[in-house]
Amino acid sequence: MILPLPLRVEGKLVSLRVLIDCKKVVASINEVARLKVKVARKSLTNTHANSGKIPSPSYQPEITMRQAKAVSLISGGLDSLLATKVVMEQGVHVEGINFFTGFCVEGHTHAIRKRHEDKPKRNNALWVAETLGIKLHIIDIVDEYKDVLLNPKHGYGANMNPCLDCKIFMVHKAQEWIEKNGFDFIITGEVVGQRPMSQRKDTMPVVARESGAEERLLRPLSAQNLPATLAEKQGWIKREQMHGFSGRNRKPQMALAEHYGFVDYASPAGGCCFLTDENYSKKLVDLWQARGKRDYEMDDIMLLKVGRHIRPRPHFKLIVGREEGENNFLQGYAKIFTSLKTTSHPGPLVLLDGVANDDDLLFAARIAARFSQGKMADKVVVETRRDNGEEKTFEVSPLPPTELKEEWHV
Amino acid sequence: MSHHMLDARRLLCPMPVIRTQNKVNELQAGDTLEVTCTDPGALNDIPAWCRINGHKILETKKQNNEVIVLVEVCQS
Ligand code: SF4
Image (cartoon, rainbow over all chains, first blue to last red; front, top):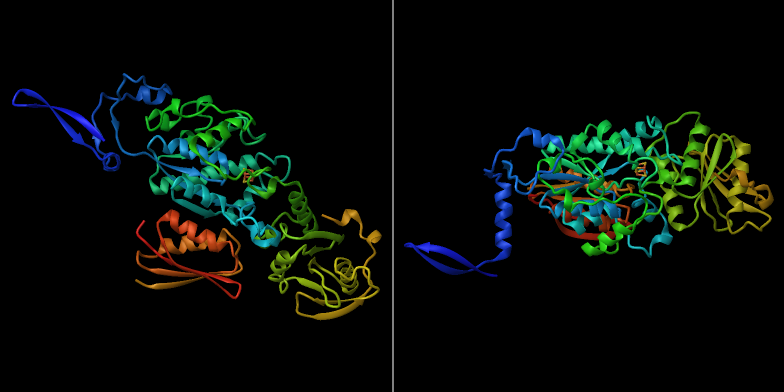
């Protein structure tokens, strides 16, 4: 663009017309910010910094003009996408962080089930980061998360979802991350009143307090309903450029997405993880009951996502593949578990989790035959292989449907 | 500059991406990393992670139900 630039040359005012490359100007402004150049302004008193009031535009505090840095919790959903964008628009350098608990809906089921093949296999957190043009750090918290799930101080939601403890834990991890990496504050896409447990007006301060993040935690989508946090007090970000969303109505978020031109974003119905799913939670509780202890390994969580789970006896359950993708996935576990497969007729791979004597194994073979294409046949051949390698072949009559009890389905 | 291998077979996404990320963070610019996975999702996810974080994908291929991704570590 061309700008008139008034100059005084030997006492006379002359006007120069200057051609400016806007991109370069923006680049140099960013560079200045990065170089942490101190711009002297009138002094900023601590009273103002801590009062929670936003300085009036005429009030120009002495601030250190460096680009503030924030890390944003990216779940892959719309709220964290928008919250991050709102902060980026104000010139803050943002990087994303995504926590993998093992229960995330992302990826796994798509990877396992063949019938999802038509859908593009994408990781939504990566997609969000790429859409925003920010870095994404994915952190494996599978082991540490066990304690959150098994002993939640604030209890569970409608299912086995310890949402409040989960949020506190994730924000705490983000706080550790910003301390280590020299970042200034943390962004989440939380909205007051949106979720019954972790996003209520009375629980949102609990997350800030118990995570240790305190006022380094910023929720840009609801900031106008909440007290000012550090990012505002330091002048890194302006309250009027954030939002006052509240409640379960998603329309404001959808309108904001449209404003930014975001399409094709993910909107998972139940939440970002399997723990909010009723059936999954039932399977998890069943696993703990059967084993007599509340514990799990990564393989357990994975297997709960796959196949039909049938518990005909308290001491063992069967995992029956529902289609090719699941059978392939279960095949990877066939050497660790006792497994069953019909050979006279096509049928699914069945894993037996628990302990089974010979009678149990025979009974399991009849159930496996029930789920094969030989379910109407008089005799079906089933090959079994115990977890100790011992192999046995049975010729069985498939269990009649009336004997396959509804309550066995976990 | 050195070449490294990463076995991410039998891991489901996002684990192959996490392993790739952690390995790349230990390497120097110019090093190459060959990741082998069995989850076909890695074919999209590892390149996406590399694009976002400023690393180069030199090659991706599928062979015998395995996915191989060759990454060049860049200064980021
Ligand atoms: S839905 Fe799952 S991941 Fe999300 S806050 Fe609740 S427990 Fe945590």
